[in-house]
Image 1: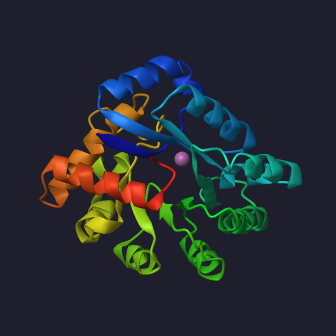
Image 2: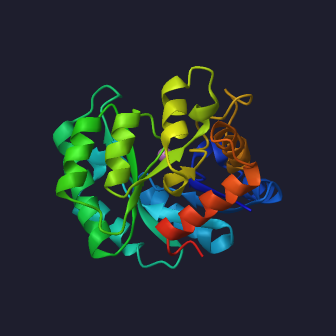
Length: 254
Ligand code: NI
C-alpha cells in the first residue's frame, strides 16, 4: 500500500481521471492527495474525492496563482476545509523562479493561508522554489500549528535541518531519481526516517526512466524504491514508514 502525498489529478494532462485513478490503484497506490492550485482546482479535487475512495485533496492557492487570491477566492478555499476528505491547506508557498512574480502578492496569499490552516486545525503543503529565506522567515513568524510538509524539496541539507527542527516533513518527488540529483540525494541520505514523505507531483516530474512522459501517481513506488536504496532499507519497510508519516501529518487521511 502506497501513498502519493502530492499530485495534481485535476491537470488537463490527466483529464481521463477515471483511467488514471483505476490504473494507480492497480499499482497499489491506495491514497493520493490531489493538491489545489486555486479555488477552482480545489473544488474539482473535492468532487473527485467524492467519486473515488483513494482520492483525497488539499484546498489552497499556489504561489503562481497568488494574483487570484482575493476575499472571494479565500472564501471558496475555506468552504472546502470542512469536507471529510480535505486533508490539508495546499498547495501554498513562495515561488521566485518564474518570471513576473510579485513577492508582496505571494507573501500575502501565503501568510493568509497559513492563518486559515491554523484556524481550521489543518496541516499545510508548502511549495518553496528559489525563495528559501523568505519562506523560512514567514514559517517562523506564522508557524503552522498542525504541521506541514515541504513538497518536492530542492533545498540544501542545512535548510532541511532547520525545517525538521521546526517539525516539518520533507517530501521527495521524481527529482530524486534524476541523474543530476546530487543535492537532493544528500538530503535524502541525511533525513531521519520520521520526517520522510514521497510524492509524484504528477503530471510533472516523471521519475527516471520515465522522464519526459506524463507522470501519474502510479510512479510513486519508483521514488520510494530510490529513497529506500539511498537509505539502505527494504522498499516495503520504507513504504510503511512513509505511509505512517503521511497518516500522522494528515489525520483526515484515513
Ligand atoms: Ni504541486
